[in-house]
Image: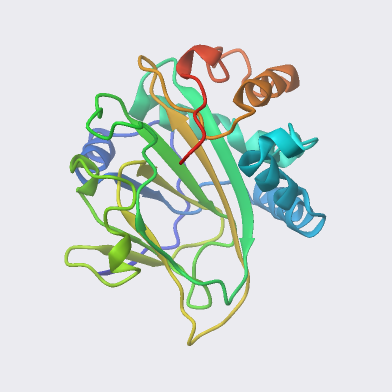
Amino acid sequence: MPVQTMHTRTRLSGLDDTQRARFEESGFLVLPGFLPDDLVTRVKQEVDTWVDTGLRARSIASALAYDTHGVPDVMEFDLPAHGELLAHEPLLQVVGELLGPGFGFHHMHSDRHAPDLPGKGWHHDYEQSVQSRRTHTMLHALHYLDGIDSDMAGLAVLPGSHREVAGKTACAHLGTSVLPGEVYLEELPAGSTVLLHSALFHARRAKPEFPGRPRYFVDASYCQAGTAWPPVKPYWREMLARARQLGLAGPHWPDLFAEHHFSEYTKPE
C-alpha cells in the first residue's frame, strides 16, 4: 500500500519504545526530513562530482577488478560532506540504539539515479554468506537527498520479511511487481532517511511513464558488533584505515572503523 508521509522534520534525541518496536517488527523506520538542509546541499554537490568526474566508475572498477585497478584514489567518504553524513552524530545515535554499542561501518554508496533508470527488483542486502546466521543485525541507512516524489522512483518494502531466512535474490523473479502486504514509499521530503534492517526485502520501483528529475541517493551500512561480517570491498582494510586517518568517527565511536568486525574478503562467484 502507498504511504503518504507528512512533511514534518524528524528531530530525535533518541528513539522511543514505539519506534524501536516498529523497527523490530516491520524491519524499517522512516525519518522524514532527518538531515540538515546545509548538509543535504553539500552532499548533493559532491554526488554530482562523484558521478560526473568518473570517481564512482573508478570505485566500481576497483571493487570488481581489484587486481587490475587497486585501491581507488578517492572513496565516497573522502568527499567532506559524505564523510560528515557517514558519521552524522544524530544518525549514529539512532543506529546505536538499534544495533547496540560498538557497531561498525560496513560500506557506503553514492549515486544520482537518472530519471529513466530501470527499477531494481526485490532483494535484500544482508551480508552474512550463510543466510541462516541471523543472530546479529545489519542496518542500511538510505538517504534521499531530494526526498521522493511523483517524478522519481519509489521505495517498496515488505514488512517483516527480514525475519524470513532467504537468499538475497530469492525474490528476484518477481521483478518490481506489487506484493501483498508491501509498503510503498513514494512521497518523502528532502533530506529524509529510511533505516532498513538489511535482511528486509525491498525494491526500487521506477515510474517510466512519468520520467522526471534525478534521484540523489546515498546509502551507508552499519553492522552489529559480536560477529564477523563479510566485507564487500576487496580493499576493506585500506577503506577502514583511511576513515580512521580522516578522524571521521570522533571520540564517541571508537569501534566504528575497527577491523575486528570483519572476516576476510571473498570474491563473489
